[in-house]
Length: 102
Image (cartoon, rainbow, N blue to C red; front, side):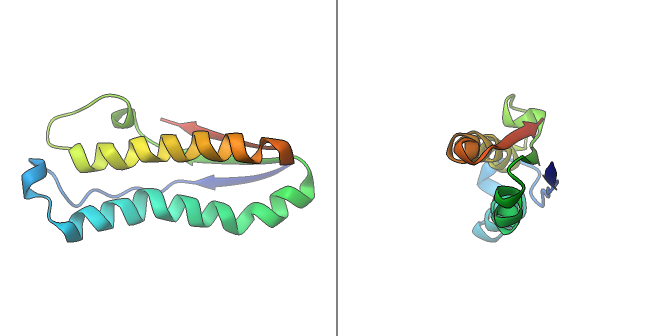
């Protein structure tokens, strides 16, 4: 089995969501969501060829449960959970499992 693990995360914005400018918001989503998706797609040919692949993504408890002053980070980690669910459904027919640790 071939395993690809994504562990990405950053949070340059701590405080009220009104203090999170577009640049910080973009950085959070680029680092936490986009990078996980792009890294995973780079491994898809190898995972498909193996016939038994695994992708493990890292989210956070905050993707499920809100914490004060972390709204943009929480939104990005909830997006990783959604990405995982979507990829799991899409890749199941290729015998690639996609899971997420929170």
